[in-house]
Length: 451
Image (cartoon, rainbow, N blue to C red; front, side, top):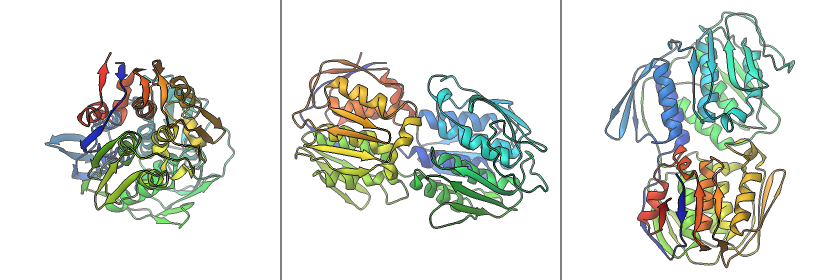
């Protein structure tokens, strides 16, 4: 589906954000790894959530909708083996399940229908870590399709030469405890995956993070969910070392998913760049780093207030550029870059090299599409440099979604301030995290047509 976005005169109203994609993924996994029934309140309805639910059902979980909630009867430490799992285009789903399945199954193969997106994303750091714990891995240079085997002495075929953990009694999937080292320079999801898998191994596990460490807020979300699920993790203050005692089990619980700050950040940015009065409820003070979008927009001059559990934006004031470390709010960077396109002066969002390893290269690919709209954006290895056009952009063109939900939202925000309507190709991929994005903008007064 393509969409045509028209210039917006005003946005006004109250719109609920989607439920958090990241928390939904983690709560679903924790519920499946428990024996008994858990209740998840307000889970996200997104392509990522659908992909994970499909995979968990293949592994033996029973998922029953209950109004706006979801009941999950978990498989605990004994999933059934479907032999092949397809996580769609969901990178976190793939990584979490690779580690969990390595800890519980003797052999599993992961595939994807998105060869040009998830199929190109690197998984080698996690595969190397699983090799240290006793897995044998077959992959296409660290990329899908990937087969993981356990049940004896093994090592990753990636040839890292990393230290192996000491032997001992293996868990049902053949992994052993000990110390495992994993790089944090590409994604914190590798460390989160190991944290979810560690309690299933049956022995003490120590996880040491090497290199740079990206997206610490996402790791804190993982630790919060594990704590709620009854799992003890001793974490160093800098999140570079974790100790997970053996002999633990996930407990069936009730969980409530908060609103999604990355999706809300797109609404905030859209409201900030046009005359508006928009309120977004269900935004708690939780571990989502993207809640810093409120602070960034305020620093840029937006009239934005986070009061209790809601954010109110009254747009129309001139925005100004600035310098921002984007690592704490990775999934809001593209939306805030869109706001910067329409600000006065230069904006630099740095320390975001990991954006290059998402659904697309969110630095080079996004820069190219923004400039097609008439923006003036440059790039560095780990940054986006925006020369603002407060008068708006030309528009009147067709741009590519790059099959990336964050790119789609960012291009839409800028298009609201284009002189001529803009067509965004394959915009249906916004459903990966925010299926109602275009509907919500329409409710606020935007004119967006399906083409």
